[in-house]
Length: 151
Image 1: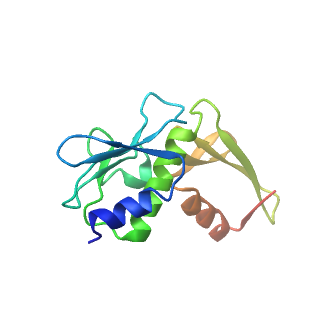
Image 2: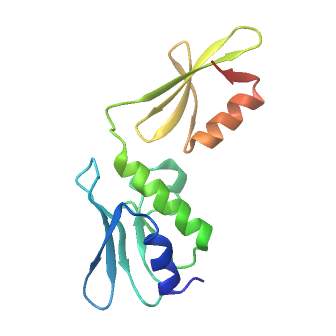
């Protein structure tokens, strides 16, 4: 388990986050560039190593997040802390009304779309939802396994 100081060092390597001390020697880290009401990325980081990262409704963390969209990072290692903070910043940076769309084509000429909408990566064939993924990496891996390449 990382120490409080180690977690702070990782979190403070993100220049978009602002540290705000709160009660009981805990700290919050705010993302003022958030496109949402929520600005706290790291909440109640405590000297005992406990702390929470806001991931909202990201599918990638649905089994770990509580009903407020928070994931406890107490037992996270360095790469896990870095990844979840990056994901949280991305989550709060995106405009939920602006989907990302990509076209993918197979060797046979079949075209499908990969669309990022409502916090998930969805694969559509002729406007029908075929698959849904929590990360772009998982969706791209699936498409490549199925023989598709990005146009």
